[in-house]
Length: 194
Image (cartoon, rainbow, N blue to C red; front, side, top):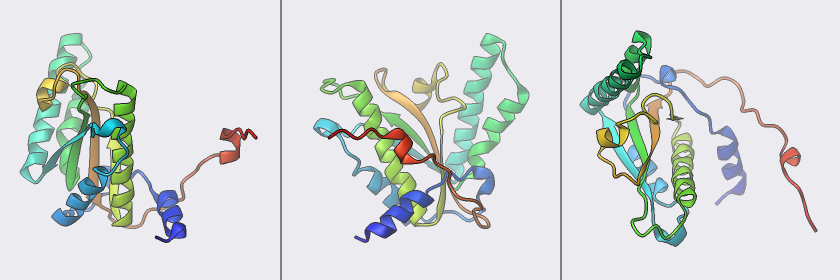
């Protein structure tokens, strides 16, 4: 493995939003590799808590209806309904080649703390991000929309102790990505002892 290439891959990873995707679908082989690499995330006691539901083709339209209907139900019940939010949820999934719903499946034995399970899922998503970047595929982890709404677990058929963690949007990028990533120096975030 070339460490310089790995360093550049990590530095060049970006969130690429659905409005930046082309209409060209991502190949099944690339999606499968993204999922395979997610499966190699660190996992305490081998609980492997990451779970994914992949939406593609007509499934994207199904997801759009599911999430916009859940939003409408919740927002009408609490008096916060806004038509533009409903419309955004009804259209957003169809801008992507694939949308992957992400959730943490809680170890039934609760053999590790929940935060460790959540961290494992986040590491799996980082593997997905890096794999997408290596293939030149746009990727964005969204935790807005219906992620934290009442009824989301039932909507996606996940268990009570599981935790829904949002959506990974994937699409081939139209045009070039402009700009570089910005980070404050690591020296400002590290304390050396010894």
